[in-house]
Amino acid sequence: MSNEKQVDSSRRGLLVATCAAGGVAGLATAGAFVSTFQPSERAKAAGAPVEVDISTLAPGEMKTVEWRGKPVWILKRTPEMVDSLKKVDAQVADPQSKRTEFSTTPEYALNEWRSIKKDLLVVVGICPHLGCSPSSKFQAGAQPSLPDDWQGGFLCPCHGSTFDLAGRVYKNKPSPDNLQVPRYMFEGDTKLVIGKDEKGEA
Image (cartoon, rainbow, N blue to C red; front, side, top):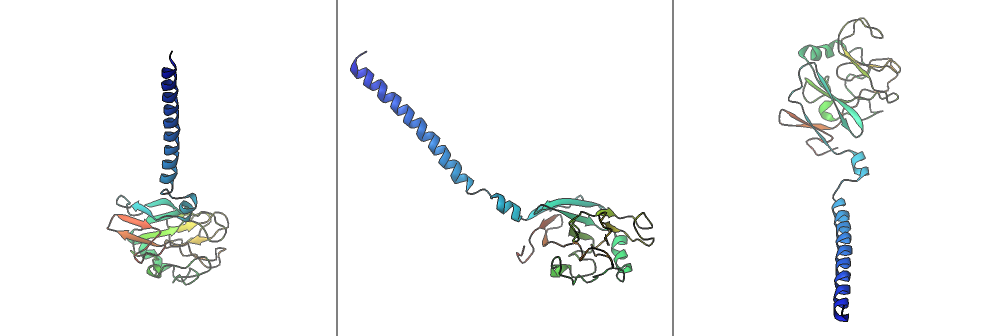
């Protein structure tokens, strides 16, 4: 092989190696550039708003979704469930949601049913006492660990705190507050957005 051909071959090999290295570096740079547009783990933990389809939620049914690492309950209350709230006003510790030890209730939930719409309850499913998750006890009437005149609601199995169908804690229970109502809003009749409201507040 002549010297000229050897030089051409060497140049070709060097060119291929340089292009390959440049391609790898370019991909790495592009990957790093694209990753800057991805939400960080810290941002995910902070909790972006969550959109929920509620079009198939039937009266008496509850759906659970995750927001900020917490379970959020969406309960479609029946007319009977809504009516039961007045019956327990005198039995709950904070009927108007004025307590602020655990969280501040949004202004649109400062009512007896603690929600924007009477039939739809949206609360964080964590007991303010020690962070346990209460169980749903929607059936009215006497049951184990519940009073004989039980109207339906939630029971925390850890220390016995009970909440009505608006998430209001009953008197003389360990929980220092009602179940938290997160910021939320509706987009049409079938979509619920948890984590922000009409004012853009989170």
